[in-house]
Image (tube, rainbow, N blue to C red; front, side):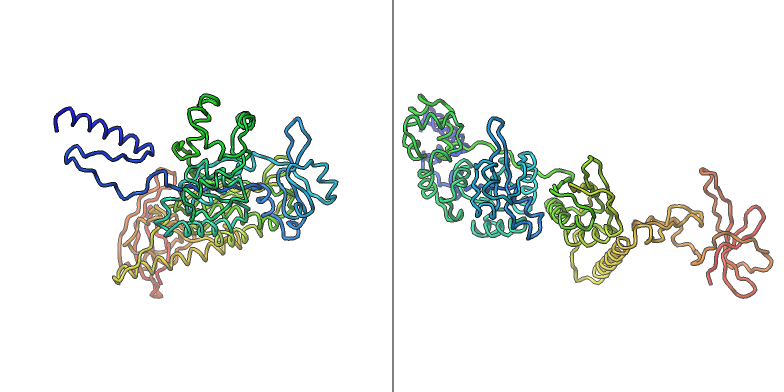
Length: 529
């Protein structure tokens, strides 16, 4: 092999590597060193990768229905929207409304005439996008790569999850369990490109099990899709219909050169996405650093007790946020929003960091029993930014580590009990004596509501269990000194400085006390026995 042949083969190798990164198959060519065909790596090619698309055709209405009682959900309800030029039309309808004859696209006046008891509300696209973000945060507990297609779609990259759940069937089972807890209607489809998955998810009669889809099967179903589901701009769709193209199969049969000449480069790129040869980059969802969610209650609510049901939804979202980041929350703020744009805040604090929804719900319910809502609320929001990293508890056979684990478990049980008492009686009603970083005995401890204990500077030195509220003057000749002196000279910086020599002494009744001398005067400060 001469030098020119070797250089040519190296150039061909570089070109092949670039094509491989772009998703092209690796062509067979001799290895420049051995002259033999290299072995293909046993990995899945990028074009065989499956994408799932989750279509949520009535996401906003499902969110509103989930906040209603069973009787309210049985009433026919629709969401209507106006395009400005036309009258308001129905864009989302629940099952009761559809059974009564209401159809999507129907004029609002016609729908209300057909069903006199029909409940009509205005569709808000911005609010639906917020619901979509909450759903992405909920699914982020299981799926890391989620791309938002507002206002009603999520693109899921699930190929790598097969290692965790065994296969696509296991991934779908976990996804179904997660979606069942939020009660949303959805259609799901798979594709070898994001565009194919989005198109197939729009066509209910072509729905199928994503985990069983091979590329040939997906391509065959794609050819049957009518052009109105192609997700093309209206102008391009009209151009294709003018030349007799009625479905995507007709479009895929046309030569690429002819498409580029007649319809431009945008159509060529579209067909390349349909065939899986072009995969545009995705902007994946990332959870926010702070938690802030807001729910529309749709009707005015007059008490905090009536807000417990929608509060459960907010706490579920908070649990998903904490779970995805392996955090716990120690406090957050509930806000009731009123018709006059005012707010009623309630600050919720926990004695023990929590992250499970059911545990937070119990304590919040106890705290809200003591609160009054002066004005009816239209919306409820929850904001949290006080988080702590979760501690890993590992079991061990070593006795010392077992004792330490048992002590931590007892401390957590105590903190949980104090948290429930504080939630029931109020934060100020349950306090704990905690050591302070101060040598003055009267300031060495304080009653506080939190459970963070400061290290006492006097550890190892004798201190009485009973400290008098105020030192009492004594006659020192009636006492017998046993231990001392211990000089305490501190506090000069805050205007309450002390200079004392402390002794342990016994009085005439054999009672052991803690006495001190200050400015040639003697005082009793506490009792040991």
